[in-house]
Amino acid sequence: MLTTVQPPIRDPHTAGYVSAAELPDGANPSPDSNGNFVIGPTHTPAPESTVQANVPQGTVYHFTMDSKDSKIYPGIAREAGTFGTADPSNPAKLIVTTSHLAPYTRQVAVYVPKQYVPGTAAPFIVGADGPDNLLFTVLDNLIAEGKVPAMVAISIGNGSGDAQGSERGLEYDTMSGLYAEFVENEILPLVESKCQVKLTKDPAGRATMGGSSGGSCALIMAWFHPEWYHRVLTYSGTYINQQWPWNPKSPHGAWGFHEQLIPKSRRKPLRIWMEVGDQDLFNPNVMRDDMHDWVVANENLAKVLAAKGYPYQFVFARNARHVDNKVKKQTLPEALEWLWKDYHPAKSGQ
Image (tube, rainbow, N blue to C red):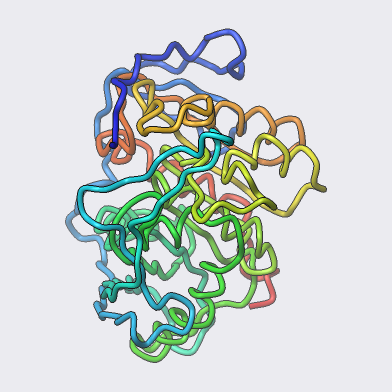
């Protein structure tokens, strides 16, 4: 049976957390700065988070994908009202017996900026759990202000469900390059043909984005395929033990990023923006493996990114819950500007 624990309100200056700079209430970090920052408790939407008069608006295309047309994800689902049980011999392993093959459809929304020049190779960002209309609005405004390049945004709906035994969980929490390969081989060609755009092959011009398991998916895509993606943006990333089916090669799922993978690997050419809320998720399922605290997971990730010398910006938000929309409206413009700060298309070999 699924159980939940009310998340405690965390202090960003708790012993063992990363050292972080307190910003004035309502402020965001500078897009020129790296490191750890504390924002809040007030979260006022940035001006770029709302539609602005006299700003050119891009075109948003919508299309549907059916599971029967996918060679990579034919579809699974967990029976309603069921979850799983912890393996008595291994508390880090969840046994799910109620997942089975099941069809799905997914929605894909593609934003093409007004400034796109037909025939040119556009930089782009791939987002999980689409459609993300806030992202499209923010891009309209930032592109018009010259703060980010004129990029395409590909906002992909998940295959339904959540967590272990679901299609969404399989896509987003699996520690492999499979979802990035699905996007590369089954999504991007459709985007180019249906939306009359050309997408850059340059990894410096490609970004991933998501919240919760969509956030862990964003890092997984870039980690396992850095030849495709160099930029990652995550809200309340699920850097915890939620992978299913259990895999002995990555027995702790995305918790392994800060436990072993990043500390023990050569630094990859990644630039990472990340956020967590002071009331983010804590141990919200039947497992008691000490690897289900979203705040600790994100704090640990920031710590290992710093130790390896990655360019990153970590925002700890006060008065914020899991993938908090008010925090996203405050921070997304700055996050995107920071994410693309070092992008030079003339040198990118598009």
